[in-house]
Length: 74
Image (cartoon, rainbow, N blue to C red; front, top):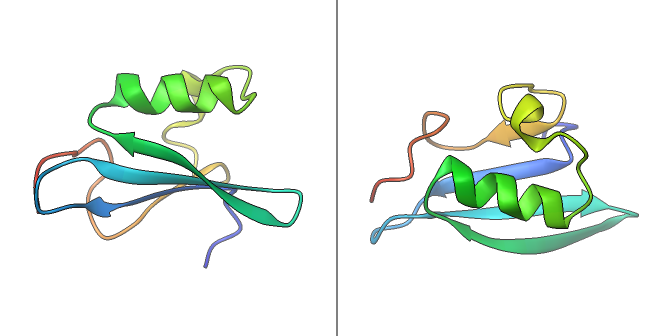
């Protein structure tokens, strides 16, 4: 696992990617994102001050098993 506190998992068979944030030694599922907009909303609710700015920063976000910003069905 990377050191990134936010993990966007591979797209499901029906589309959307599970988003998890690691904070205070725990993993918390934020939800299923179907777009960058959904992901930004989740990150805002988790307290990320400028979520749009961190989407492509590997120190913040790890995009697993698929290209970044692709939320289509696997």
